[in-house]
Length: 229
Image (cartoon, rainbow, N blue to C red):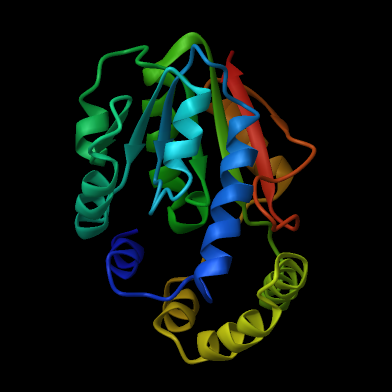
């Protein structure tokens, strides 16, 4: 995962323009919010920029954002420093929290950057951190044999609906020659079938099922909702 952390801590261009970033945050935040109640203490693990955080915390009792990339984490801390019910922590900080710290844990668009062993370790950590009746949500799980062109098509369609179509086309062209494309080719993405990720969750002590829709605009990917078994 270290190569991906370094990438996301750099001056990358994941979003094609400001409009893309804005609507991505809205769609992702709304997708997460459906799993949260106003009394929930929520952990968003591997949150990235978490541009939705200020809206999402209004749906919860508190929101803890966990980000491994140090520069990104410090920028995030500065942005939300006036939000009383948002905390920004490192993975090491989260690992030191007491048992049962959260009612809901969300890990969205992270599993593809973890090795299977890293995911197993986190599933055990999340199980400890969850309340007995808590909920784990894992979003954006990449399926095997999903070609990159399907992600590209989804971005273009998203851009068409949300008003950044031409920027999406330009962004796709730039991506071909970007550090992201090189890293994706060299490091790859970890992929799971529906059966495999469900089996992994079950082996870690969860009851899990696939949600009807993935969080976000990429419906070729999967979201799973799990509780302690």
